[in-house]
Each structure stands twice: as structure tokens, then as C-alpha cells.
Length: 245
Image (cartoon, rainbow, N blue to C red; front, top):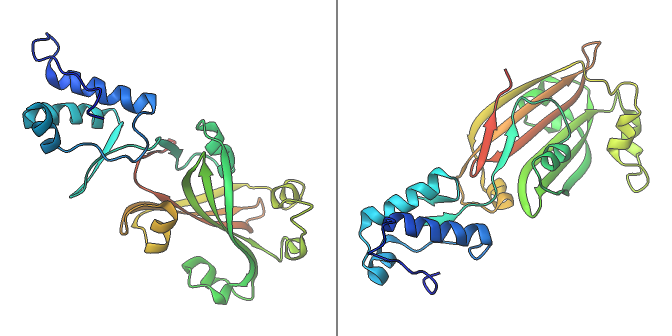
């Protein structure tokens, strides 16, 4: 990115502002791709004789505008598209949330199986007795970026047809949309700040041990029965979260 960088030391525009504008234009135009590593302070100093304060001012402005991010010990990188997720904002399908954020949603199914609650180590499911669930594990993408790892569980005692549903003919969402028991009266959502395990980091294509969020959601029918339990993980890099009040 040095080839077309021209800095005028005699201009009334400060050098840090010239550098900031050049990098910003390169990011917004696509000349710098998502995740691409930016030159170091030493690179700029050697090539243009810039002082560290000048470079740091330019990078700080880019950081403040969420155009780049830093990784300790590794440097500065072009930031992937931000994703805004209202953590307490309704029980809308994840695909709809992604589409409302201006991205094209898609999914990768990792697992689709029937499980017994005693097979699970999860705190919630382990409290249930003599219950069987349909379990689905998926990755949700916005454009080409993995946004969510998602698991959801539906009790077969309320939705017995799920055990033998032919998803090549009828999707689960189609089946549930017409089911009389699929009425959510209210949902309880718990949010945890976590360190993502190696498997999740691999899915998100981020550094091992990166921070993230875990969301546990329990959806209740009007009669108090639990109709869905779900777990979602969101990587913490480039994510803005909000809370409805």
C-alpha cells in the first residue's frame, strides 16, 4: 500500500490526517481487504521518515471509527464488517437478524440428531428427566463471515413429529410455524462473557483463547412448558451488542 501513498510535508493538512485519509480510502474502496495486516510504525518510519506520534494519531482515528483493530503482539489489521446484535431483542430467527443487519444469511449444519437429556453435560438439560430432544447444531453466516455458533433443542414429547420429519420436503421452520404448541409466551435469556474454546475459535477463524459471548435462551409456552432451549456463541471481535430496556 506504499506505492500510491503521497505525503506532503508542506501541506496545511497535518501528516497524521493525510495518512489517516489514505488508509481509510484504501479500506472503503476495497484496496485493503478484510483482515489484512497494516504496515507497522517502523515500516512507515523507514519509508517516509514519519514519527511514531504521527502514525499513532492516524491509527487511533481509524480505531475510533472501527475501521481497524489491534491484536497484542501482532499489529493492526483491517476490520471485518461490524455486526450489531441486540442481545435481548426478541426471539426472531437468527437469519432474520442477520438480514436486518444488511447481510445475506446462510447456514452450515454441523449436527442433526436425537439425544436424551442424560447424554448431555449442560446444566439445564441435565436437570430434565426421561426427556428426549431433537438437537441441531449450526453455524450462521452473514455474507461470508461466520457470526454465530448455534445449538437448539426441542422436546419430542411436545413435537414428536420432529423425530421422523423429512427435512428434504419440509423444513423445521415450516413445520414449527404451523404447530399449535409453537407459541412463545416469554423467553428467559442469560448472557455470559466467556473465553471461546479451540473448536469455536476454529469455526470463527480467530485466535485460540479469544473472548466471546454465550447466550442461553429458554422459551416458554403460555402454559409454562418449555418449548425450546438454545445456546448461541458469538465471537467478541468486531461485535456491537445492545440491551433493550
